[in-house]
Image (tube, rainbow, N blue to C red; front, side, top):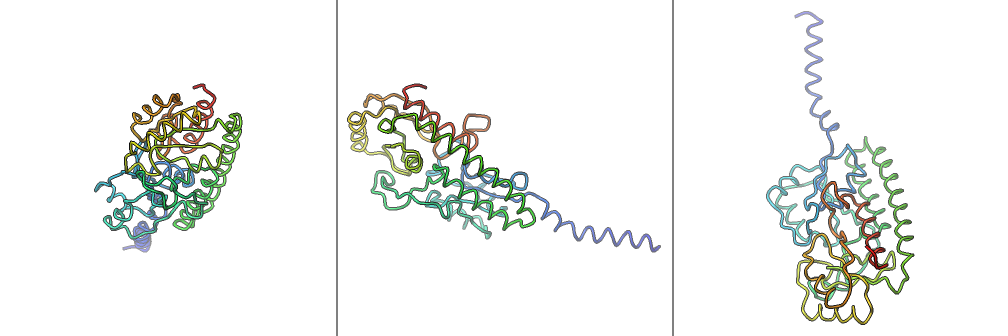
Length: 304
């Protein structure tokens, strides 16, 4: 074998030996997010550098989600798992254990200012923290920072990209926050009372000055009692609650009945725990938040 041929063979062997490591660093980071809103936040920060799978998809209810063998397989192949935490995904620990996943589980809500669960699960007294922290755009900034740091730790060579994308996304979140405050400021504070299916908007209410009432607690895993529904109808009448909203993840019949018996009007649809399907009005987190704010302002003003 000539010297040049030996050199070519050696170069080929070296290239083959290096290729698995090269592929590992160049392929997108495989990330599993627990639900669609969180998956969108990861996608915004990670861009093309992540391959994201949401376990609970659009218009689906994470509170009552039942993982499948396919979900376990997604986790088994993942490089990183991102969850909301705060008890939102009661099924996640069992799923992680069943899948054999041994990597890092990132809690996106880490560090947010918590709201206590005063309504409770299934009508029971509240005793924990409300998990719906993404319903305050200020908290969303913490989600973005936690995702940015987790992706940067997993792929240090691409940290600069994640930092840039997170900064740009944070500016969009802050701009939307200003818009939401301006929209709701146009509604007199005493008129900002709303009925929703379950207690998913407590953070929104605290941040933007809206009182949310609901027949169910922070979880949809239990049914509202007849006494709770009757009490809510009475409250609507006494406090002149202007609008009732249905949610994309729940059966609308209960709140429609409450609206009819309480003399309120249906103000439209709100997106609480899930995005809408791709190509529709709330298929990203920012579109979801903007839609909800507009629907609330319009419904409370008596228009659609």
